[in-house]
Length: 201
Ligand SMILES: [Zn+2]
Ligand SMILES: [Zn+2]
Picture 1: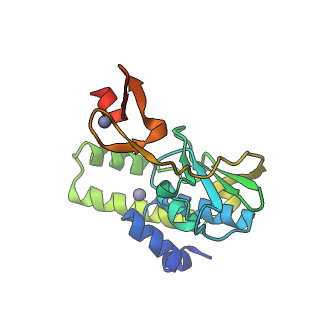
Picture 2: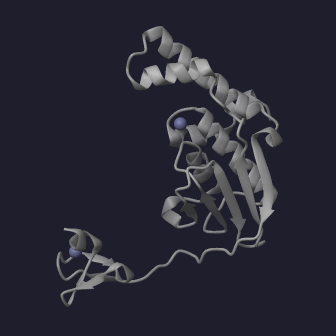
Picture 3: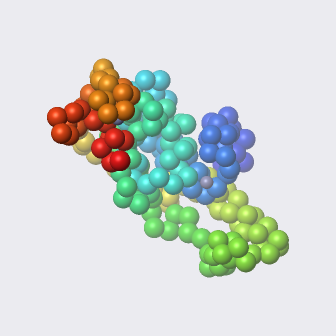
């Protein structure tokens, strides 16, 4: 699919709806998730069939959640704060894992766009400059969607032990605030079982 086809596809629209805007980061996440699912030969996870491990918390991970069905709330979406555009997908059924890592030059900002970005951050950009920045931004999103996958990512199969499925455990009432919390998250202090909120107060 080329950029136009992707931009008008239902899958991409769902990503944009969830994320709020079109940007190069979202496009990277879209391409990474599609590549990962294709390698694993899986479609979207209804339950916890697929696990995604992401190494950043930027725009792209929203597309990963939408396309793979690995979400923060289901416990099959694992975030490692490494500040890297690396996405690993694991299939529970097949036991296969694939690591998708962005290449250094995959979607670099030009010097001009970098300057404009700085001005926008410092709130010194004029109307025209803002417009130019967003045009370049959109152009870069299109480039990411159009590029051959091997120009964007290094992709390889990996052997990773799957993390256990999400734990469901009964709640216990905190003896300080009286609110229920997962039993394993309570800590005993001065002979009383306390929740995280009460311990830090
Ligand atoms: Zn974004
Ligand atoms: Zn408490």
